[in-house]
Length: 340
Image (tube, rainbow, N blue to C red):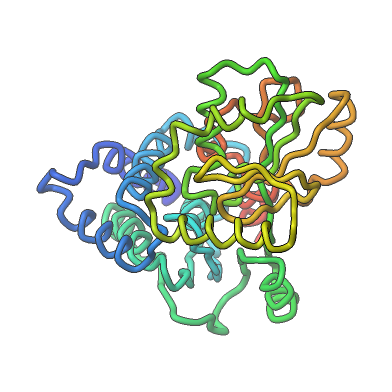
């Protein structure tokens, strides 16, 4: 068995392990402990959101999809490189795709986790290493000088620092991006509820969460509020509620026009990034205008959800369920790693 097939087999085994996870199963005591620690370390990480992340990865890491994802690349396992991974921590396990990319490409990783997401990823990497009886991951508190390439994810501001410190190394540096949605006005109730999840899953903190929406002229905003309403219990989360109250107060004090349904805010704004508990919206006349605008602003957009024939649009409810080949920021991680 080659190193490539051994590592692929380990990924499939991990997928099955995560797919079958239940918190009450005594066989998952160690993982449940990590879930508890992750929840305690980060007030935005709920038990439900962590478990949903685990199950989503369980469904994603299947043999067919892993094979389809990795098939186009040629990896040399003769010259392993050390890849420095600087991971974000806005949603649970957000850096896991980079980790499994390094794993599958045959390299080793120095992993700098976000300070509030340090518990789940070591469990995953340990599972892979035990399955293949090899060591490929080292978790570090700060970047070291012992690396050959860098994959770093952060804000637009931190990206400038990454460019300064790591610009002389082969690198992928990711910045802020947002999800957007384009409505036709003919969406079904089920589609609207699915859109609500695209907006509010993980409290809207993910780069794939919809933060801006395009609406046909004359669209009734109450229809949008109705789609989000099944997720009204989000306001019971203290950190979300604090942000909702704060952003509402800012809008009122600055005399900005907005709509409010008691747990969520709608504001007419052309910007792609919106505050927590708020969605920006913009009206359009022609579908062709939107397609052109989205293309012009592709560097600010992580994903698009729509039932219209928008290039690369995803179905409603799938913004936070990317396929393995849906590389963040459109930067092909496996291609980058295969050329080192």
